[in-house]
Figure: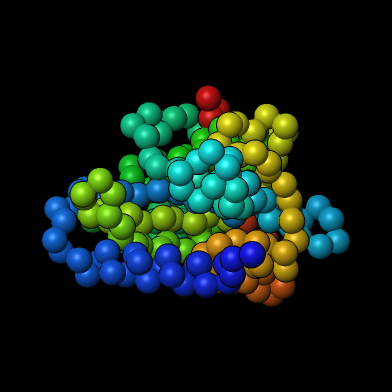
Length: 217
């Protein structure tokens, strides 16, 4: 007997919406995280990087996801090759309670660090993509989380150096990604990124924004 997984993304989104409405649990401090959509345009067809989570994970075991993670304290002081453009800074501060240049910088460097740790790649940010807010209940606490998505391109590194978070990290086509990802919101972001590339928006974003880390270690 096989299980129909076509509605899992929708059901998860509905669960998050219910958590937003449920006020019976105490709230935690808002959480911000960075998630990265790495795009390889070196071949005739653009590809996006996804990692497959270990089957031993409690959350989304065996599922393909984008690399990403939460801001850590040292991210704010990490050295960088260049500072982020004011346009990018404004975009990253749109959906946060305590907006500041320092927060925007830390979030961008979180994105670069997480990619290096989880995939083994060195990258450059080509622009912010979007932010998604959601709520969920964990250990009796209602969590409010905002995930900030970045567009990136690889500049070096080696996928064989990916960490234990993933069983596998690989480049796949946009069409395959749209059917491989679990959540409808992420599938929509892949489609949006594909539209931007098809419209030739990638180079324009490159000229407008520039941020990369000197070291992610």
